[in-house]
Every structure is written in structure tokens, then in C-alpha cells.
Image 1 (cartoon, one colour):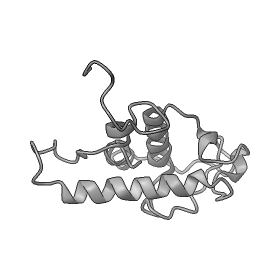
Image 2 (cartoon, one colour):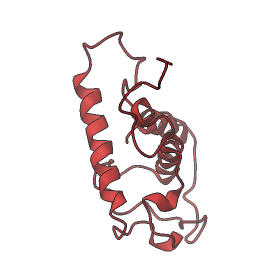
Image 3 (cartoon, one colour):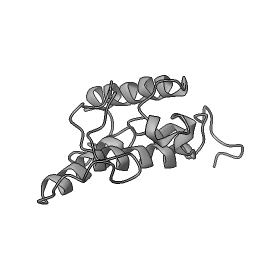
Length: 137
């Protein structure tokens, strides 16, 4: 599930780090201004704008909204109450592992771009596709 988030995250991180930004004031934005908490697979120092960009890519890749993996209360998004969040973490780790080991498979990926993303399998659907559509398309 790291999908294009690693790429989007790396690009967003480069953009964020390349800009002189002041941290948002406490309580700013929908999730407050503090650093992200409860990151277990993604780097713990992931800046909030990068994390939000990554989550948006995950959601689009699976055709879901935030509440698919997170609890409804925005103030409690770090909660592990929703079991789908653990599934997402496992998928993110799987994708990260695949991208580490696929260096010699097929054509080289663009620099800093993963070869495998959430979209590789999910194609906008919650359940990954496991066979080609009827008619070979």
C-alpha cells in the first residue's frame, strides 16, 4: 500500500524541505499542527504534508476514503481501533519490500520511483484484481 506514496512522499518531502516553512500553529488544519504520531511502517519523521499526500494516493489507488482505515473522528486518526489500518500497514510493508528486491526485474524504474505501487494491483478497487478482465482487456 506504499503504492505511489513512497514516490509521492519523496517528491512532496523534497518540495517541503526545499521551502522555508514555519510549523503550523497548534490546532491548525484538520489534524492539528503537531507531527504525525503512531507511524509504525512509514518513517517516524515523515512530515505531515508528505504523510497527507501519501494517504491521498493510497485512498485513490484503492477507491476509498480515509475512514476505510481510520476511525471517523479526525482527532483520533492515529488510533489503531480500525483493524483495516493494520492490513494497510502490512500492504505498505509488502510494497516497500517488493520495491527493494525488484531492481533486476523488467525495465529499470525512474529514479526515486517505485516499480510496484498500490495501484499496480488494486487499480482503484478495494480488493486487488487477481485475473485479467474477460476478453483479455
